[in-house]
Image (tube, rainbow, N blue to C red; front, side):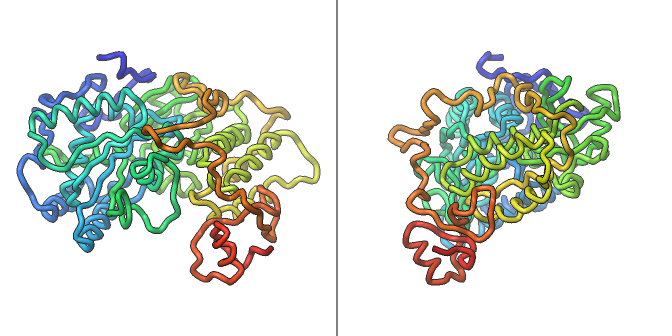
Length: 494
């Protein structure tokens, strides 16, 4: 095993080793082309099929009926596939597919594992969906150099063995930023080299890379598609890859069945089925949930608690850790790692982080719950990307009067906390020569300010939300000519 492939994980294993999964019998052994083909890989693309035939095979696979995207949004995969296939057919155009392996989530390692150790599984899934939507090009969008080398070697093996048949396989270097994996940022990065989200609609399945319908799927999603369509595949429980870390737990990658009780998971890992932990579930965009709620690790189970499975990251917090300080650190991460293109987001995340940083100290005549609830109502829809609702994470009050040290990402020591270790070049990233740098000066909302009636975390005179002008007033249209688009025209005034 090459040192270049090494990940800072103490353990990699499946929950049930008797059921074939993504990790296989030897998780630390990297796939080769010959070994993967011997295991039944690349069979669906070995013989020509029409896109409609491939799509029908995917639809009829029982293991894929309930498959959701594993990048965080959990959107039904079949819906995406059919939407891109339909849009491309109506336009009489060749579509584009993208394997999204940017993985900007600090608490997750699953995508990098798959790209380094299971590249052929990801490429097999990518070629299958490319055939299903009649794609002319297939991109692997990845940030870290070790994963790029692994994927490049795998593509070379495919080209040598298959003679370059099928769609063009291309590697696109992703910017190492938190927002680079958002699907519109992926499309924009491939087109322009700048990984920043765009307004929606149109969505990538309508207008994507090069203006054609584009299917963007997480690399784990593609791996499950390839595994489910192997000739020897047997139906099994819905599973997902989880990066588990936290208090007294070294970081590990586990293949878990969807719906596993959190108590059963902790019993396996710690020997205690009811430890007094809280868990940051789903990554930074998920939520903090007490283990004492005895929840199931599933989409529906976590949704009922106001959280989400997200990218599958589970970070257990020591009982002495202040959950408000954790929420403050998460929002501080957003403040330093947002796209730097919407003033509402930039100002609000700073204000919320500062507000939460002092929330552990008793302050008379300050209703924290009321303030956070009001902000959570005001912010959604005012930026290109959804703002997280942070007040759910802060319903429990800190028992101390000072902020504690915050171990959210320190457990994964190999990946430093970005806001504590800023890049020496001033956060300027380029994905290709000549691409414009990402700097704070790129914000287009600095020409003027417009006030809104309600005081928010960004103040009473901070710019507009950004949404579409379906019922635009003349005043709102004037705002648009100045370079702004307001989500609530009736709420804006000179």
